[in-house]
Image (cartoon, rainbow, N blue to C red):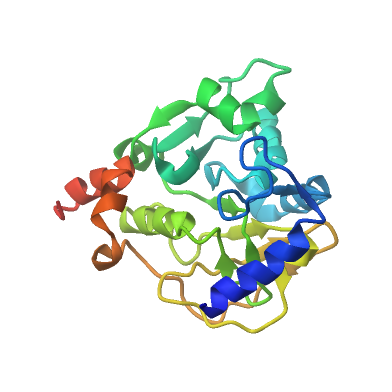
Length: 245
């Protein structure tokens, strides 16, 4: 078993005590990054950041622990893009005015996002401009900013697509939100596809990461499997745009 998988399993064992069960996947952390006790307090820490306050166009992952952040962004009229689960249906765009007053919480859930937000292609995203803020959940994240997802590499893939199109780069602020039990004290060495985060928001603290290296850039096409390409519409779109396919 790889070092990262050992860390994930260790964290998942602790996470069972503080995770909020998912309606579909319950506590199957291999399929869902869950919400957790105190996530609203962690969200308070995110919304207090200057990078968040100044944000005019953000990317938010569909993780359950980001429901409250998505709700607040909808209430504040902050536009953002969110990937669908597994990126199977690409990306959704939430713009100001799309949600009736009082329905913000429902709209922030994945089913609500599918109902109120509109599908958006990579080409359409590029016309809206660069992301100036990114937020993601994680299965685990180290004190030095190495983030582990569920093991499927979705955020790494999203990052690769966005950096290939100039929508994000090494200077784009990335915050991860996790419960304190998901913070790994070990010093970890990122792989060629691991995305280093700048900040880690937990219920008890905001950890500012001292970046040790550069983030990867672009899709590593030699690592993309045919099946992955077949089930990920934005990846196929990017391949066409870049003349890879």
